[in-house]
Amino acid sequence: MIAVIATISLVICTINFGAGRIIGGNQFALEASQSLGQKNATFTMWLTLSFLSPIVALGPMFYIIFQNLYTSYQLISLKDSKQ
Image (cartoon, rainbow, N blue to C red; front, side, top):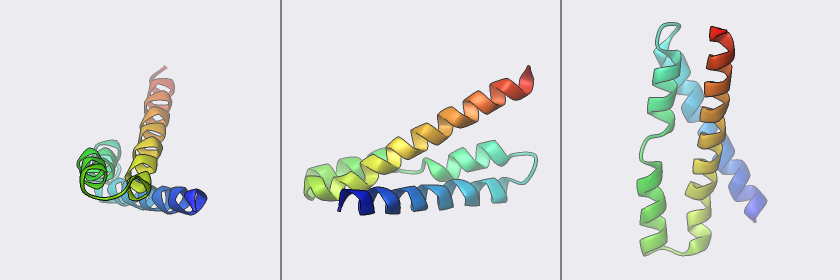
């Protein structure tokens, strides 16, 4: 069950960041990707932990893990492209 929740969170994260990249075009791809991908993740986690069960909170928690991994990847690739 945890693997299914993690996989669904990864797919949703990929769709959000990918859609942001497409919306941003060539000039604002990173900014739009971050803007769309990181919307309300912390609020969602607080909401599920406060009013629902911890199992339900795994979805937003995995999403936050995946978005932080993707943001780290973007920072590393941005640093490498400037060198």
